[in-house]
Image (tube, rainbow, N blue to C red; front, side):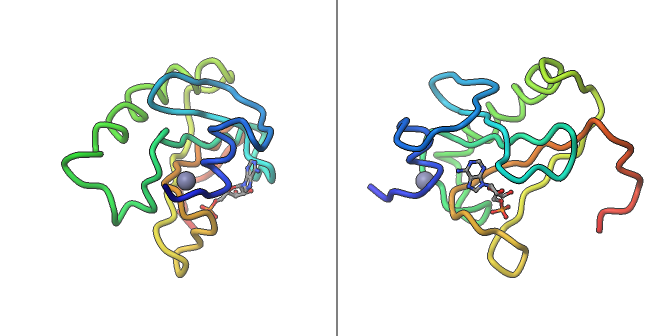
Length: 112
Ligand code: AMP
Ligand code: ZN
């Protein structure tokens, strides 16, 4: 099984500030937040990137997106941006699929 920093967080070998957890996903605060609210949602399965989502594992993505509204609400936000960086040219530094949820500040309309 591939081990990576997010797998280690899921397994409890690296500490994190958890904001939500169930049998399919973990959400925890980003170590380097770019907004007052910035957490990461990761599947409890090592999927490298959005390029590796398929019909067998997309249930994890479905589940994460079903849960994001309630997790965001628990963090005090109902307006937020969801970001996925896919591949190193797009800024993906941890090769375990994850969705950034950022908010708590006026983000504006521009993506970059
Ligand atoms: P990305 O650049 O899209 O791959 O995002 C990776 C994110 O993971 C970055 O925003 C990092 O700040 C964050 N990160 C890396 N290691 C940890 C960690 N141990 N705990 C929390 N967040 C982390
Ligand atoms: Zn992993």
